[in-house]
Image 1 (cartoon, rainbow, N blue to C red):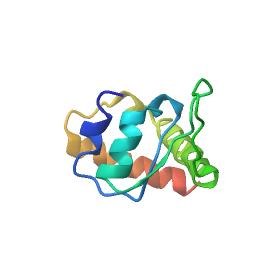
Image 2: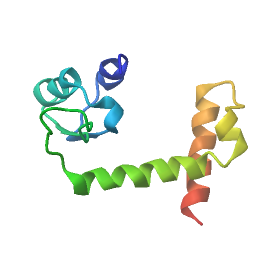
Image 3: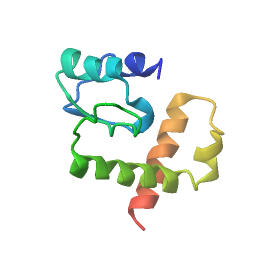
Amino acid sequence: MTHAPDLMAGLIFAALIADKAYDSDDLIKLIVEDFQAEAVIPPRKNRKEQRDYDRHLYKHRNLVERFIGLCKHCRRVATRYDKTARNFLAFWNFASVLVLLR
């Protein structure tokens, strides 16, 4: 949660999709006001005021999570055997193509 603003720095996006762990007033304010984007984060159950979020758009998060899980079936991607970022990215792209060709 503390590193989320640093990870978003320099990015341009229309919507940020995250799970309930990122339901924070400060983070949502940062997304909406500084990035002028939609925060697609479901509220926690213990919130006094439940926020609305785009449920249809949130369903796409599951597709991304499953795709990453399938890519990690390649042992070389899951354990990051490659020492350089260039080689790791190249094999990540290769593993992605293999998953998409299934």
